[in-house]
Image (cartoon, rainbow over all chains, first blue to last red; front, side, top):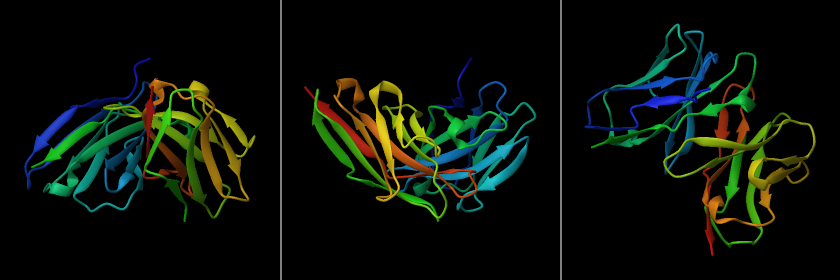
Length: 114
Length: 113
């Protein structure tokens, strides 16, 4: 079974631009979560989607948004990029009916904002 | 509110030595606790988890952790370090609703020969 796939692996953007990151969960997983990892703040929860609906949201500004498609693939969008948005963005999926002890993480997308 | 604190951002050991990575938690409900490992340029891999069953939890790669409620601790240990254990380790607790993980700042483990 293929793992969680995140694309692209690396991204370089400039301040003010917007960016879209993609995550394909493990086949059969309907829940997708996003986390931001920075050296200063560590790992922080962004949001979770299940069956195309956002179920939970972390404490991030509205510039961070996401969506999930009917095939469970998810995208995360950051608008009006700031230097502080430079981070590793990790996606995780889990099977339906399970909680966080069944999370599987992708390798992440490294975003650099110049 | 749930939180975890990892004591020591960097731990160095010699190959064959005991590995001890410290994690203390704060939780208003019985916690679900996790240890994850992250190798360079990779995502997170679950090492082990505590979900209110046995207090001594065994994980992959020879790691184990003991849940101590009286000390609010969940330290990670391995009797004998291997070069391949060099990585960053994260302790995490599930939030109260069980909908997300709250991570510590991480501990980088270095192993020297």
